[in-house]
Length: 226
Ligand code: AMP
Image 1 (cartoon, rainbow, N blue to C red):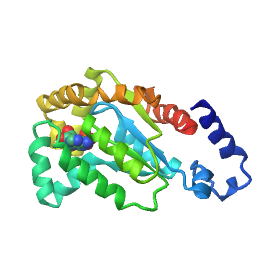
Image 2: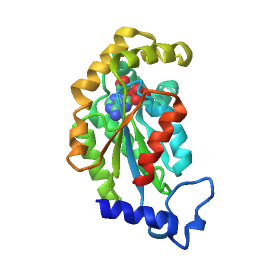
Image 3: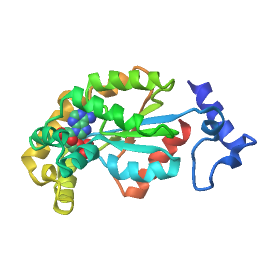
Image 4: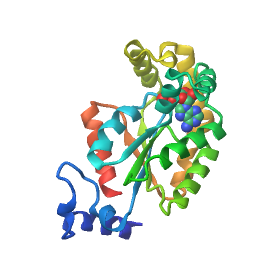
């Protein structure tokens, strides 16, 4: 693992073809030469800042950002049957059933064959989803490189989400009972996934409290090593 990581880093800075990489991009030229993907699960409870950080990091590392919450919200807006189903769970602060979510995620991945890697934001959220993601990546002859988790304590999550709700118009951010239920759901079904990735030596915890730029910097340090 260490050997692989340092090899990747050396090549990133010393490979003769590194200039193939666009200047603004920190994406590894290894991908361009050998089609190696960088796939990262950006993890954390609701309100940890996954969406905000993923928007920045996807530009920095030339990755495709998939947020399952965003895809559900798009379906709700477009009044699709999937949107109607998802809304009935989201309004309660509960998770959308695995089968529906997994199929949707797989379709989003399949829709981006050109991707040199993905940031998964809000997926996986259950053990079944984590297993499905392993299978999906293996099917593409690739893997999840890391779970990078934003760590924020619960009361700060509630404060952040209530404040976001005032601007975003998200129904599930406007109601404190729903917010607390989402956090409870996280501890019931999702937090356990840390163990799954720790078992594979792929877990990286990052302090998610501070200014947005500060947190981006902490995450960038981790992403650079992957
Ligand atoms: P988010 O935008 O990630 O906070 O997700 C908003 C809501 O969408 C969640 O509270 C769930 O109801 C639903 N959702 C998003 N991602 C998933 C997932 N991976 N599995 C099940 N439900 C999800």
